[in-house]
View 1 (tube, rainbow, N blue to C red):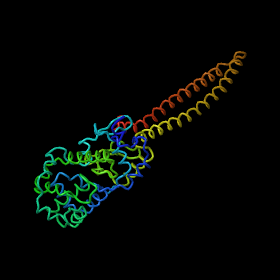
View 2: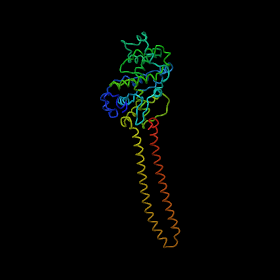
View 3: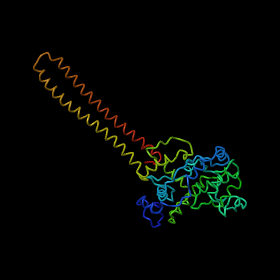
View 4: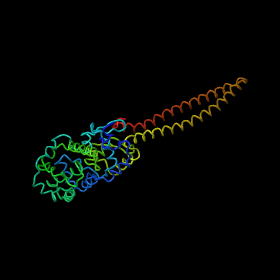
Length: 374
């Protein structure tokens, strides 16, 4: 039994045997500080000058393209409990798919190379910065958000607040409504912002959060859940959605309408086989429908052939006993040729219809297979 299936031996039954309703009983009201809705709304309220400033002065410009989308709690809990912590992958169907730093780069458009952030967090915090941004001893996410939205012109203070806000709501959220003061070390020198490896930072924090969630049987799931949600939706694609090719960040394509369609597909089909089964079902239904239509045509042709054959047989017998039958014989031969032509055309139509239906269904399967490796 895999690590993911035993939930790190914390006493729970395998996640594959756990229903969404059972997960909802325990985790349905879990506290989520990670919020794409909150962050997306803040980005929507920023002026173009503020967004351009973020893009030019940091390497987190991809985050400014994030829309307001609700996180699907129960789906995320199931995904988190399905992660094999040894291989950092989730098995979809029978194929393990790793969650990689390249996924982070594609989804968010942030760097996966550069200076490791963790050593900077061990330094002593700048007291002046802490005093400037803290309120009653805490750097509250609400205060950061309020100041960002109220900013008239982008400057250093705006940039520092944006970085702290992104850390607290997207890149490294916890269950707390404040940002740890250690992250002030990252905004002491604004010239260093483009040097940091933000992608690996958020990915490592995510896996640490999932480990705590699983190993300590926590109710609340922390970390970059936005990453997990779009990792799944981008790898396991819904047949109803059009996934147009686009450069990073892929998160820019997702709004609440698209998310609802994809979420509905999960609820109807499940995490693993739902979408694949639905595609095969549609393909088989189309083939069966065409086969019924062609079958009816075959029966009609066979009936006509039997009647015509009987009539021709009677004509041939009559021709043998009479003279001047050459025109009638030629006509009989022509009618036989017509029947053969109809049967040939019907066979061709039958073959073409089967290929057409298989190709239409196969396109959907291939689209899925490119990511799931069915």
